[in-house]
Image 1 (cartoon, helix red, strand yellow):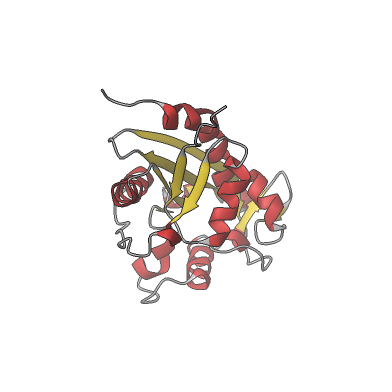
Image 2: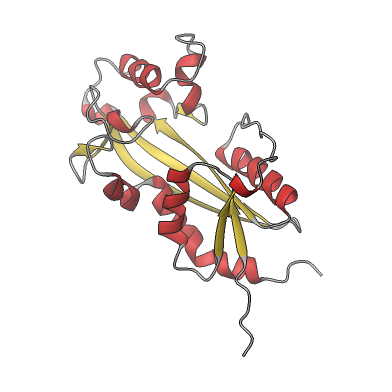
Length: 213
């Protein structure tokens, strides 16, 4: 009996840690997952749009066109209610936008955020990590999934695990910051995990659909 070839999905990243996460969340599906390391001439894609969807869409579409395969890209950020949703899509550039440094820096971003919220009590420090996933097909179709993880911004840096805003993002149900918990525990509850669960139910049908005729 002839075995049908599994559909391939390119993850638009060369980050091995991110690939591990996607393999954990999507690895049980009957699809092959590949990253951009097999396509070293893939051009840099600017992520300067005003929304997570547009940033993820731009990278996913570029990867789909370049590889000729369906491609997945993500964009995420931290939204703080007391700052009207900032830094949001500009999360990686928060301190730069405030004129506090000239290059992206996790430490500068965290300290800038703590300074912005100085004096606020915990009930006014609500925040969430948000993630949007876009899968783009070379034929022009796309599939979108998203997820969020609710929490609060702490009053100081706590923990040395993770990256980005993890040391200041306090998750009330576990009574710890993302910087204090093991990576495996964070991956189970993170915004990317929620988005992947949303994508999980849609992905195989999307990849196997014949698309426009």
